[in-house]
Length: 195
Image 1: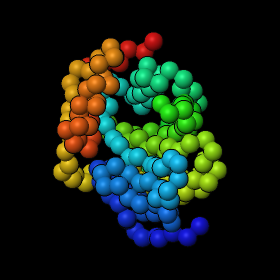
Image 2: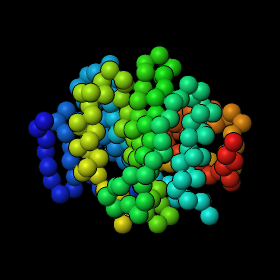
Image 3: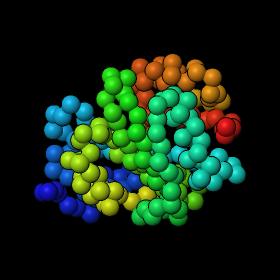
Image 4: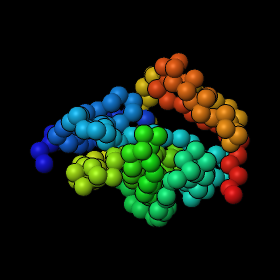
């Protein structure tokens, strides 16, 4: 696979990416996506949040999986299991399978990287029949991505939603935030009850 290599191609927040596979492009303040006109645009998203007071990485990931299962009832989750990620004090990984609204079978490989109180979530998303074609690119991107010590702050539109409950109002709130042009939506839940 041919690709461009440089010291740092993309840096935002605590993320630093030094590799862009051929046929892929950067999406500012979000991550990377495959640009080859497939049925589904395979992508790698890079986000980060802060752990709540007293929360550890395992509990954070369990909360994320609980939220996922409430919104995607057919989700099958493998993990979390311990992993190693460049720049992280601790890392966990998961693999998630589910069907999109249009019926396409989706697979997501996620890495949760913790550095102090910051958690970075790297999510590789594609459809089941494309995984064998894009896995080498996913692997290369993951190897060339670091969750760094320093944070590079960039201004972009965002929306913060405080006190988000798990009562079903989340979808409408997120749609409203997306219409406002927000690049990121931060959810500030007061707690996450595990069931």
